[in-house]
Structure formats: structure tokens, C-alpha cells
Picture (spheres, rainbow, N blue to C red):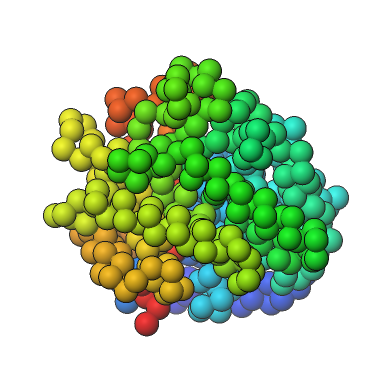
Length: 417
């Protein structure tokens, strides 16, 4: 009897929420309720991995601002990364819970006047641009003025972003004269997408040239001639403790940094005009990058190490976020015709390795992605030296969005039949 009452109450509540979600005003409440519903559900093993992981993220983080284990709403790049996955899944499945999850984040962080909570443009932090992709999508759907104003605010950062002598963006104002591989993913897909949507003529051409130049500067200074791998960071001034006094380069090849770089290339190519001369250069960079990565792929598992070229060394480990990023990059590049079909086999081997070695599943169907490096950088306080010991001793955790997001993206690519 009690069970039936609960069942009736649940149905009634769900019906009420469905009615409310159609109205404009309480849509944010609808997003909150939808995410709560997901958190109470058992995640079906019959779903594809992309949805299983997305729904697991929504269980762990019922509000999208909580992604990356945040305790209060914050404008940051991991949120944008996972919400890009939600966008693709909504487009693929039509399940409104994914759209509500995206909109809930934007409406929590973006004020009616277009200002963004916790965002300080004067920091000139490239990381802050990535979640602009959330707003580009939402504005294309419902044209809310606050989204447009917020987009224009983010885009204005690029106009005054400090640069190297060759026009490369500093990673942040607090990191003078430095380019990090991470920054290419944080800024360039947003910059290219915004340009495609809002710019024309000479203005668009200038922006596209600027975007390609970011990759040109990286390729000129940060590729190792022996391995073809790219170093994590480059200090043009050569003043940082971590920087080589002759080259300005950081001392190691960090997996996720190279992951960001590959994702940046394949995502920027979505927006760069077909006739732009930079396209062939970017595809060439992608090919040499991919050839270098195949050489350091673990033969047994198909995965990649935290420090890419030191697989056999003490405390190095097979790292989930970088492995997921490489799988996504290769699989998408094959689908788009940038890389030969042989890379589909390579990406599938990596993907199978992730599922076999790094995935665990809870009784309620929640999927965990283990062995993610929580964070790594260069310089700052406390000072990050970029040494081998530094990278292998940073925190390792499960379900870091910098891993789960790329895993969903990789899954979506490999689920495309």
C-alpha cells in the first residue's frame, strides 16, 4: 500500500515538473529537478558508454557548476568541457535532461546584464574562454540577450590578451611570456566558433589567421626534434626556473597537455573555412603529432602514460584523461579524413584499454573513470617545477571531468557507425 502511494506521488510530481518545464520562468528549477531525478536512477548498462558516463556525471554532480568538485558556482573550463558532451548527447538523443543540465549552468553563472559570476577579464586567463562554447550553443537555440552580452565580454578578452613577440597568447597574465599547450584548447575552438558565427570579411580573415598563428608559434618552438612530442610549456623570456636557458622549454612531455593540443586542432578545423591556407598546415601538424604519439602508446594496454616518453620509470602510470583525449583526437580525425584509417584501429585499441583497465562500475550502474591526474601546471605558488617527479606526484583521482569529458567525446566518435 505504501509503495503504491509513493509510486502515485512520484508520477504526480513528475507530471507537475513536466508542465513547469514548458514555462520559461521556472526552467532553471526544471534543470535542478531533472538532475535530481538522474541522481536517483539506476543507470542502465544497455545505454552506450557515452550516456552511461554522462548520466554518471549528472549523478555525481546534480548541478553542472559542481563539476570538477566545486563547492560553489564558478566559471571554469572543466564545466564547459563536460557540457559540450551534454550538447552532443542532446542533439543525438533528444533527451531534455541533457539540455537542462547545460542551461542550468549558464543561468546560474550568467547575470541578466551579461556579466559572468567569478569571471575577471583583467586576469587574461585563457582557461576562462572554453566555457564560452556553452553560451555559443545556448544563444544559437534561444537568442537570449544575456548570452550574447556574455559572449561579447569573453570575446573582448582576446582583443587585449597579452602576447609573445610572434603574437602567441600568454596562458595567463600571471604567467608572462609563456605559452602552454593547454591554452590552445581553452581559447582557439571558442575563438574560431565565435568568428564563424559573428564575423565576416576582413574581420573574419584576420581572426582565422590569428587562430592558425597560435598553432604556428607552438610548432615552431615546442616540438622536440627527436621524438616529435611537444613540451608542456615555453617561456619566451627564458626566465622561469622550469625553462631551459637556451630554448625556454619546460623539461617534460605531459600527457594531458598534448591531449589538449590534439583536441584543439581537430575542433578548430570544424570552424576554419575550407579554403583557408592554414587548414593544410594544421592537418600537417596533426599528422606529425599523431605519429609521435603512436610511438609511445603502451603496447600491452593501448593507453598512454602521465609522462609520455618515460613509461617504464618509477611511479609513472597509465593516465585516463590523456588516453581519452588521444582516442578522441584520432577517432575524430579519421572520421573527418585528416588521418588514415589505420588510426581508427589505434584509437579503438586505446578505447578498449580504457574500459578494461580504468573503468569501474557501481551497483547502481554509476560508471567511474580512474587514474586521472587532477591538475598540473608550471610555476605559480607553490612553485611547479615541471620535473618528472613533479608530474608523477600530482594528485590522482577518479572522475575528474578533464577525463570523463574526453571519454564521452571518444565514446561518441566510436559509437558513430
